[in-house]
Amino acid sequence: MPTADELISPDSIRRLAAVLQEAAPTASRWRAVAGSARALGPLGLSERARSVGEALLTDCDGDYERLARAVRQALTGTGLTGWMIWPVTEAVATAATASGTAGHFDDGLDLLALLTPRLTAEFALRTFLDADLDRTLATALTWTDSPDPAVRRLATEGSRPKLPWARQVPALNQDPGVTVPLLDRLYADASPDVRRSVANHLNDVSRLDPALAAGVAARWLRRPAPTTPALVRHAMRTLVKQGDPAALELVGFHGGREDLKVEGPLLAATDVPMGGALVFTARITNVSDRPVSLAVDYVVHHLKANGKPAPKVFKLTKRGLAPGETAELTRSHSFRPVTTRVYYPGVHAVQLQVNGHRFGGTDFRLLAATSE
Image 1: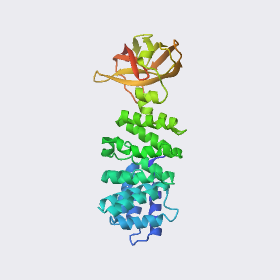
Image 2 (image 1 turned 180 degrees about the horizontal axis):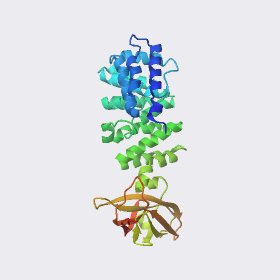
Image 3 (image 1 turned 60 degrees about the vertical axis):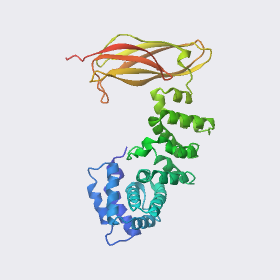
Image 4 (image 1 turned 90 degrees about the vertical axis):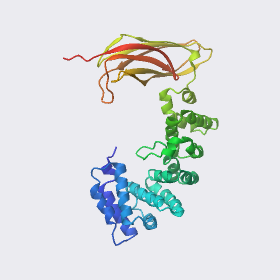
């Protein structure tokens, strides 16, 4: 992935100053913007966008109308494009919401819709959402009818509760259902980019309100477009990984606890050396009179430094079973040292999870590393 310096680079910011000077000449020659290129060194990507955005406001004395005129004039050419757009959107959002004028607020949203096809305005939309959630979402709802897929995507991507790289909007976390009308308008959109944004947005919602997200997905599947099942699978990915029964059924896994006889996990050894592997087997039998489709996972309850267990779900297999059919499963789970996890010696446990239901549970001891 490109680095922050390759995206919002000093050269791109100097070019931004030149583009603005050509479009809207000023006595300052946009010196604050050009000078901000020298201060980018230690800053991350979002910090760079905000820093250059502040320089834009300095050159405009915080005057929204001066900034908007300059940006609109620059948009008549092709030079205002790429990652220099992000700081421009940040400046527009800050000035429009700080002015306290309703006309500036609405015009600022209109300007974001003009800027977003040149990169994205999703991050700057957060400033509007924070300032007036209802007014911003009402405008975003009108964007869902735009002929431009970039503008339609702005409606759902900019309002995601957990948008990566973006500041949090507390109101979206407190009431994730407030954006569902946007998703309802766009889940069957013709653009793959828009549909992917809808799926990611609903996945964000699932982390805040699983029942709401599963209910929305179920409603879409009752009136699906050809692309809806794939979208729902992507949207339910977090809940599926967590073993949520409703989400698993939505993506095609059927079979409840009463349909299954689960034996195991049976361990090859109850003592596992640090750096070694836990080997176990299991048997799953469909005892019902109908076929079942199973997502089989296993859960390792790792012992933490505080002596308490912390469960983590790992994928095992996906398969169907006819009535009376049995699946024989084997897995070797490694305890090799990794940078993302610290293993502590002591009693751990492993259990099976089938379609979100957990079965059994067997303890094993992870042995302390021996010194050579």
